[in-house]
Length: 202
Image (tube, rainbow, N blue to C red; front, side, top):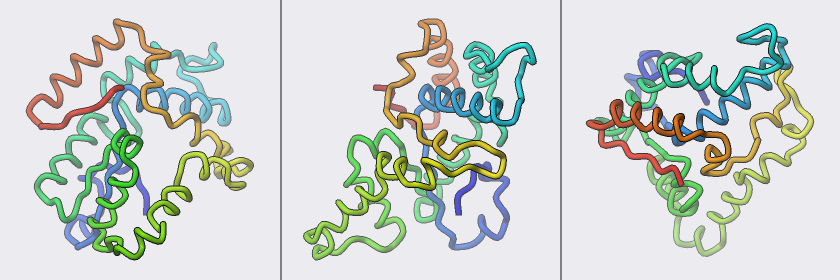
């Protein structure tokens, strides 16, 4: 099951059970750019705007909302911190996974995930290429090119292909101004400075 719910909004039956949770986190800058593109595609499909006189929500308006933590699923910064804290306090229940680490070391991160789920790969499986085949099947390119994602749509009318834009680390550099970068640096430093949580932006 996948969800965007904050940890505190998960059913008690999930929080208090042996259910394992995998929290996938992306750096804040690329997260914002992804959200901006997706929101504009969503709004276009549903004829929604922050400003009825504009075809899209401007990056400046969206950035202002993002910096304030606004999201459909509660305060963005709290969302991240709550799952991070749970992963520290209950490492057997919550696995905090960084998107950038998956991109940099896919095989290592997949093996970590398998161990967390208590189904580690055997030596035979590794030698037979099972890990490599899983990485191929779950790759961004393979998933993006599946028919359901090239031609399918959600019930709300948004094309599935909008979930697969670029998937690259560092795309934010093509959009951020120096002022935007400095402002987000300050917010991240103030929010996460005592948490031990670090992000890669390369």
